[in-house]
Image (cartoon, rainbow, N blue to C red; front, top):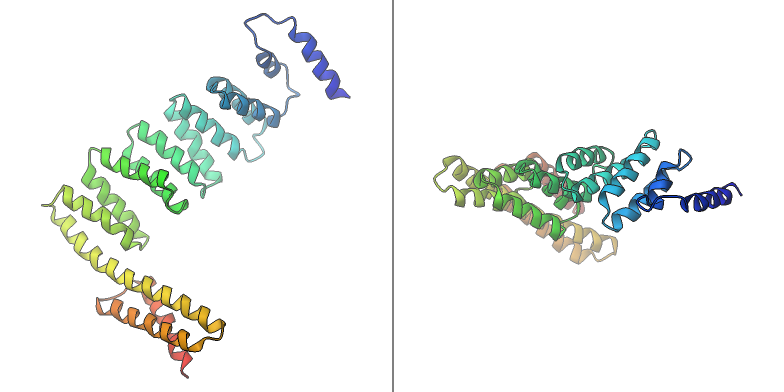
Length: 272
């Protein structure tokens, strides 16, 4: 009943507004009784209609009312609204805060990368696009953005080298390798790049063998559980062969070593 009366009062009052004042403007000013959810709806409506400054006003008011409710969604909405207006510094600030609440959200990292790219902060942009690409399992839009920022970075060779180092630090040597190669192509006389390509090439090859071993091992377990032991044994053998190939190339990383030890243990246990 109270809500009906409130709407009637608003409608009656709106007839007295000047032509320069919209009903929405009056509505948002009227009221401490408007909730953060209602303001967010108004902001969403303005955003969808490309009225980004108006959306910013609604979202800001909603944020003040939702300050004790983990306002990650509002931070994201404000960040995207700033981005649409070309307010890239503010966009980056709000998106970083939103990522603090939702660090696994690929969209947030992509939007932050877009803001940093517009600010010519290419290293930060590349890091954000890489995170978005990884979290989204190689969404083409996010991964293409990473490629683009590396291409436009004035320090192209170093930017590619840094990206290779990031993947290598995560022990993803296969993914790191193209970036190290690109850095060397751009600066072929750099001995540091030359050495890194050689070392990573070996690790990437080891990792490919270990990935093959993993695939064979997983398939072998499937056959084992379904009672097809002949197929399982053949695949266990294949996994061990791939492990031996990786070992033959040199010392394994700790992660590779642990996987290899487990596969061999399971294989040997099969014949006890």
